[in-house]
Image (tube, rainbow, N blue to C red; front, side, top):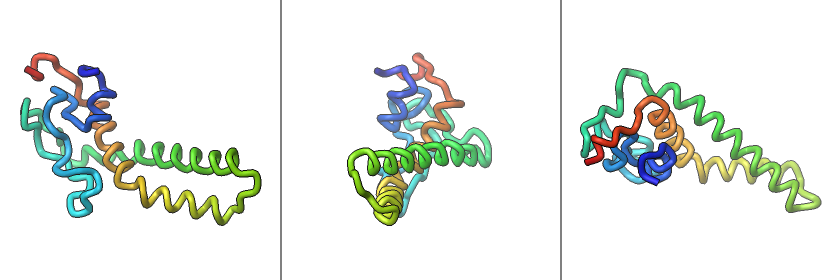
Length: 124
């Protein structure tokens, strides 16, 4: 639903107007991995309010990574009766490589949404 932080996060749209794109390219473009635009193309909101703004996104990324680790580890134990530790580690490492770019980008958009708030007037 437009106007909520979840909308901005899931659609990867501007936290302020929910119209403009947040990233330069798609999430798995390895040449532009996680590159955030300087400002919104629609409302001209700055995506980089201060130097080093996205360093705090590391904390969000850590939390998302731990959630992924616990989910994979618990699922392996829940769905398989006999699963080796080696297989569990392989599943976790494989999922980190597979979902790493997504977690990296998701942590940045979540961090931005914590500090940049929706303004309905800017969406028009």
